[in-house]
Length: 366
Ligand code: ADP
Ligand code: GN1
Ligand code: MG
Image (cartoon, rainbow, N blue to C red):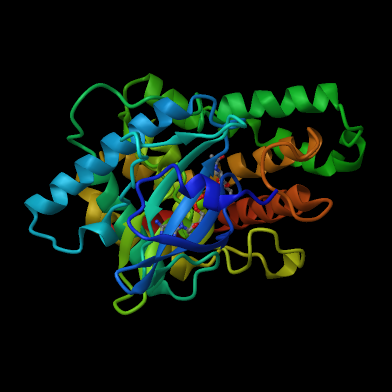
């Protein structure tokens, strides 16, 4: 659905005159638009974004998190003497009423960000330097939030990375089989069931107090960091909807999931899907360089494992959504979620086959 962005824009405290807007980016969740405004004799872009409120059930709490996080980042950047503040942290444009979001007549929640120019997100990583820079940026983001003042952030999606509960939801979807699709995905179901023993590993380590809860991003796929066109630096971490209490290993695992894959997330030629160790090495170097000193030994020992676990978790989420009738992730063709699931499962196999080497790599770098 295409929304009337001029109408949405009228609710915000924009400085210029609205010129045009178009759908933007390739996120799976929100409706994102880039919009051009005439401002001071030139054209300036902004992002208007509809928060998917069937997924994020409490947008006001979510926006409270986003405000707290971005204000904290801004304070830290000022302290550090950084001058290009609006390129290094997301900046919200308030509504005419001074709020961080606008609720339209249809009940949709909208927010507006300054557009980060001269930088891009990449659905597909191009080289090891990008992998290194993106991982370094996510690590820095995590460290920026270590001293976030105030109470615990809201959990915008409860149990988001609780792989055990993700597996239980898959089992329920198989049992109810509302779309009559389970019979056609028996081998995928077998693949998932064979790996049930790993689903509790990280939550159990957390439960035993061996790995700490920290504020994490929780959606560290590579197109959630803007890479500077000139310097190749990971200049700004975006997509803050899932920033909440979590485990460092979730963020690391999801970075590796996306960086190590040589193909799009929905590749149909599975012979091309294999985990690239040079990318794993680059992500590990980048993450350890920025966040290595806040990790304990148990976390370090599970870095390689986390890549396999998080990739498996996303794989079962795609499979679950396929079984439930494609109700969660945006899809663009029949069987899209199943194609995505196949790619994740192939990556899981590839991580399994290479985990010894990955562990050696972590040891060498750590
Ligand atoms: P989703 O939750 O749907 O993934 P994102 O917040 O990641 O939504 O936004 C989707 C895409 O829009 C991003 O991958 C990025 O390319 C682009 N984008 C989002 N915010 C900005 C911004 N402030 N400046 C420039 N591009 C942005
Ligand atoms: C979604 O919003 P986006 O496209 O950056 C999803 C992530 C998945 C990812 C898979 C809130 O991320 O958890 O890992 O798709 N976000 C949410 O590509 O569910
Ligand atoms: Mg995104």
